[in-house]
Length: 415
View 1 (cartoon, one colour):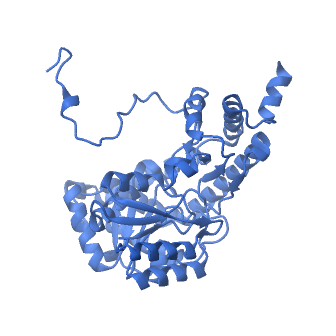
View 2: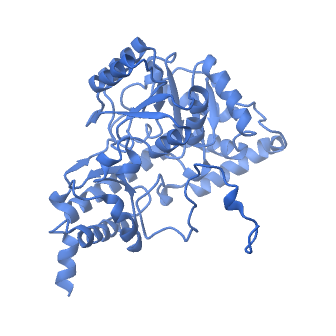
View 3: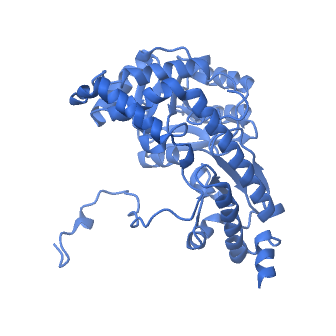
């Protein structure tokens, strides 16, 4: 005991993340996370969908998992239909598990395949949430090289062969082949074929994350890896990016041998994903998926163009590389090597600007200290322009770069 009360700090488990600061609201220029455009949330239509499903099946909410442990049947049917059209996946509702966001799907796959000390291969730049989960599990992460088209298969081959010489077979290759996070690339079909041939040769499963695959600028891209080899691939996706992050709905698709274990793992961790959310999304998207996603994609593309123009205007040649995404909601940038973006986080936040520093999205944090990720989905185009200008001002004040920022010129002209 202490004078101030019970000494919880002496009882906390080891290896916890740092304590979260008290939340004080969203910043003015919010370029982090996977938020979406508030104007594209169809609130009235979702209310109508909720009314319809509650009138039809509201009494079923008295039951846990009233359509079984794999989720609401109507939503699983929607997933089957959606996947058949875009990634060309042929599956049934028995092959689909509805999860509480794609994050839970990642946790379930990790719980199924990984033990402390195992080795996995990720793309060198990758989803920060997947990285942090693996670190907490005590798993060894190896980053495979990327180029503008995605995963480099020759580099992946060298990594697998080097590990093999050490007696290590990776437990999986985690890849985001369609609208890669954070670079926004789409892996060409020939590389997909080579990836599957390589991993099949070495007996390594492929863990395919396609959370952004519906949000592409030009067509749907090549078939998913699961469509090309369902026996070898576990596939996950999400409705967070196409409809609403707060609904927390994702899904996993796999063959029966894997699915039966995923379902068992999920039943140990929760009593089912929220049924009302599933019912509402299924009701709305069964009538509006194409129109909704088409309109959202156009909005996002327009916002991306606004952000690219703002970055080019405010930073100019100080941006050494900009990965122009082929879809999604993120812009990935590299500033000069001498800039450590982690040192910009605090002063930027004081100016109302938040962004994702590159080391949090990289298998090699030290080599990514000059990279950063900007989410363009949430803010309006005017806020994007003002926020990039504010960030450029902070960057100049802290590092002297960009020396010829348009924002600095405006400030000087107004003085």
